[in-house]
Length: 312
Image (cartoon, rainbow, N blue to C red; front, side, top):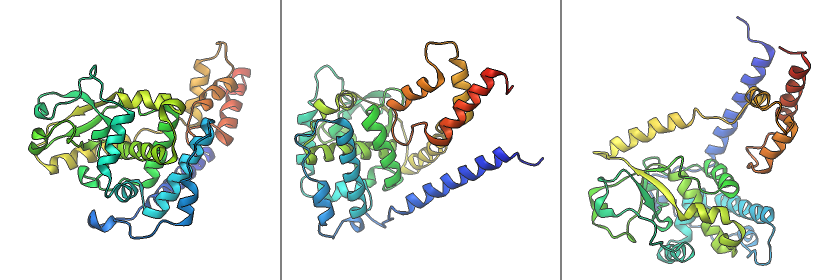
């Protein structure tokens, strides 16, 4: 059976998006060891320009753009967010984690995980200061900068959401003898999310952005980080589990035109017209997630034709 023209177009679009993602990922260098990733270059003038304090700026969209611009520049300089964090806090990681504990105080009402009982409790909460950005805490190494950029955009809009999709962690026998303060998370799945969050909080710190005042939704979501612990007998087991989860995660995609058409038809008869529904969605969506351009035009046109009886 010959594919229809619209099917061919969707195949072309999907292939173009796939190639674009591959090109973005190639921008992140691969290192043989963590030591090889250390940045030797002196800070450029461009880095100095984008890292100017944001004191006096109150518009959230302006602050978001300043953060994203700074993120892009530091990734250009260092190769990725993990590499930047490693260089930025090479000699002051303790200070950074102390500042996280100051901005997000440990709360007596939250039952944070106790390292001594790891493996006996499946679900729990961790404090943001225990999240790790070191690649040796994940079996995938450095997360791609393009992946972290997309996650960063979502965090800026929606917060660090872990209740519906907790971080998946595991622990070694050595972890169980650590104190809560010294404990560092080991990831089965969730390293890129945590690196993106830590990069964002580090940028807030350097740019003098008060997260509680300007991004209260992020502040609330970071106060309560949901995790699930998995038991693994070896690092090989962790690596295989991560690979399976990565395959599952790649299945989920943003809504295409026909998904939006079906959703808008389902909402027919309500108080909002299709265009208004898309406008509501776009008002609280990241730049990557917005329904704009040909997708928006096509979805609204098909809804209109279906409603008039021209398409069945």
